[in-house]
Image 1: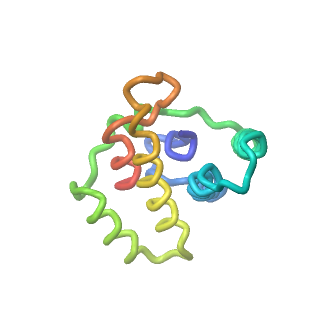
Image 2: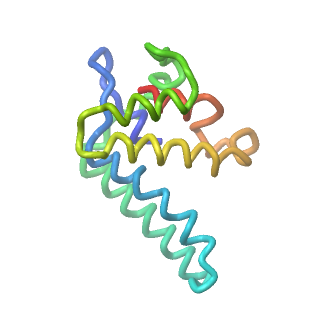
Image 3: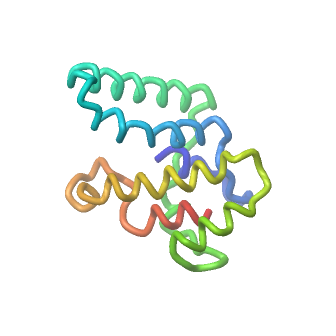
Amino acid sequence: YFTGTAQHPPKQIKFDFYYMHCTNSSIFFSSFLRASFIPTPQKARLLQFKGYLDLAMYASRAAPELLLVEIVGYVPKRRGEWEGVFERVVGHEDDGHASKLVRALRHGEEICRPYNNHDPRFRIKGDMWLKLGHM
């Protein structure tokens, strides 16, 4: 949530380098939660400490205002589905963080889909995942 909403309009949309790591590392929790060798209390503890670390990361970057409207109102320059986003990010010159972010966003969309319309705590909903990918 905070990785995408920590924007500074009217400046160009950017993702904080440190916040990207919070999103990129979230993809591992699907594997952790499926792992039969990790006891349920330890899975809960891993998730709890991931939350603590994400909050510490958010605070360490001066806790910027989180602007959900920046995602809701975003209009992609090139509309399209995830396939087009993946094609563009592969050509993006960086050290791989952008492609990992797009992968984590797509994964987040799939994992959160069952909860999107039923739980108000899930603030990123529906096409907002794809908009984040386009951003």
